Amino acid sequence: MSNPVTIDAPEGVPFIDITREFDAPVAAVFQAHAQPDLVRQWMGPRDLAMDVKEWDFTSGGSWRYVHTAPDGEAYEFNGVFHVVRENEFAIQTFEFGGYPDVVAIESIAFEELDGGRSRVRIHSTYPTLEARDGMVASGMDQGLTQGYERLDALVA
Amino acid sequence: MVVDPLSDERLDRAFLALADPVRRRIVARLSRGPATVNELAEPFQITKQAVSKHIQVLEQAGLVTRSRDAQRRPVHLDAATLEALTAWIDRYRLIHEQSFRALDAVLASLPTSDPTTPTGDTQQDLDQQTRDVEAGP
Image 1: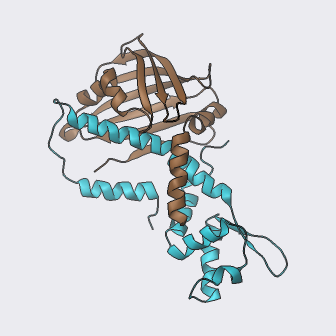
Image 2: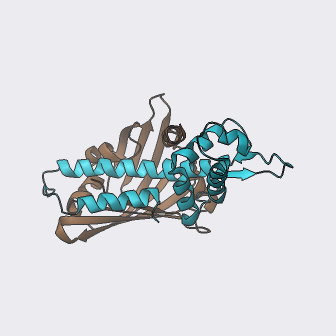
Image 3: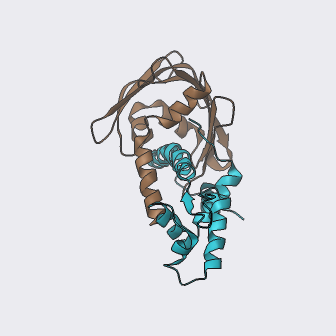
């Protein structure tokens, strides 16, 4: 009951491309990115509580949220929305508080598909390959734990 | 740190290798330390030759290595390959899959979203499994 997500981190360039389709119109997907009370319901790891401190999804607006793990560990993320065009396109900066001054630039394309469906394409550009790989590796302890649990089940 | 040290082809081989229960048990045994083919064959009701073939598959998938230790040639687990599988496939992807599935639920709850389910879900699920596991022939 779920559409596949495509994640591509090509060799040798500090990019991450993420593509996902949704069984909902582009306007609904845009709203789920624009409204903070909707954003907090879906963004980030499932078992981390999301506290949206700021979320102004307009050109020149800024955003900041804190993910808190069950053990109390908090991960802060922040950035600005460089441009936001309704139901179409946005560019934002993305900074993880654990890696200050290492800022990624993320473009999000909202695309309308036939049959009331839509597609989101995210292209993230990091300042260096190391920054990209560090981002992928950091702040994802939950996922790592779950990954190892799944591996445990696999080899049991 | 390398994000994706495994090519699609290597991922295919690793997941196919782990799709077999005997090979999973061999990997589980090797997670406790290196072992010879004879030692690995012991718990199974199959020939040593068959176990050797399973080890070859695991070796080609980069999951195990055999050292040049004279006659014994013990089999070692290549933890880096397993770690790469979990680190890249599970860790980063899991976060996004979780988020997007949660977004699906949010979208379904929105009054503006179309409540009709598009046809072809079953095929999409199959496609997704194929892509997730990368275990196609």
